[in-house]
Image (cartoon, rainbow, N blue to C red):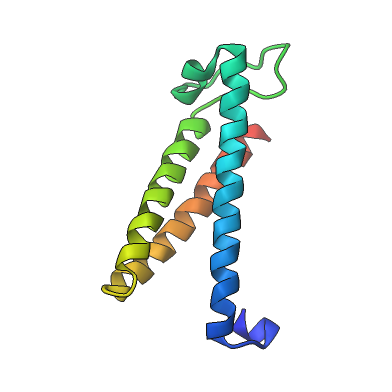
Length: 119
């Protein structure tokens, strides 16, 4: 990013944090909207823990499968890890850096698995 936009690492850091917050916020909002929809339909409990593949029903546009709880667990782990990382970032930077990279990979993999199951 530094080479592409030609700005310093320190100046880019605030945009990195902002984009991370926006990504996490929109992911949480996506989940909450679906949880509210399922609660209104009375199927929240089933969809949150549905680890088996279900058949596509005529009144639904998409099927629910293992990727929903997988994405929810990944989102929870990412959120908790970020909260811990904020407190530990300056004290143990190396651990924070490796955890940050791992969380980034986990976020993208869970998003792809989740989206792929819908497609």
